[in-house]
Length: 309
Image (cartoon, rainbow, N blue to C red):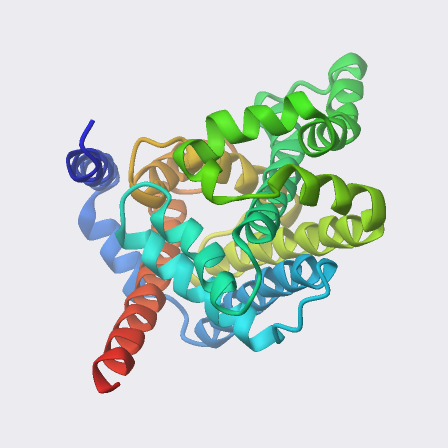
């Protein structure tokens, strides 16, 4: 399918899902919820979001340093924000993979940049998937010993799957075939670099896991304060478990950057723990508005800077 058409269809699907959310919850209810936020919580929410961006850049910086590259942290943060901002408004993986392109400009070849990009994505996905399994059990209120044992096993299983994909020839081949696809030929040395990371820098990958887990805890804390700011409430540990489920759902490639899927699933899932739909829908829509505001600012800033050259 043509990329432009695919992008357009995803945009339409995202807007339709948002429309359904607005229709069922009431656009007026969501509007009044958002504008009625207790102003004292706004700076706190923005600071927490900023820290999450900084931690995302830190995990990438750790991976960049594996290859003894001297790209400074602020450059990695810049490349992260530019790639993320492009991805909000572009089709396919253009935004995400632009991070690899930016690293190349600083002397890190595509093979190494691709490894950095994929390992960071895999660590993030493994972390939120493991939490999501427990979150689903909470939503289903299924706490029997067998199910809880299976939930506890998701973390070592996730780590095992992660190691399989980066350490085995079959796993790396699947990454090239199903993830990198046409970009694979441009990432020369991908397999060798992936193996080198696992053999020599495993402790840095574990550090990345810890920081990623902390970052998702801050994400849950952000939602927690949004709920309070909007006049609602939910126990923090339940938000910590449910938020990753919503993120996993939003990864399904039906819309642009999870637009609509994220807000719609939030309304449905938080309703199970008795959070009002206007509160949950308003919180996640507010988060989306902040992300797109940041993305628009970053894109406009670099377009303006480019036009001045």
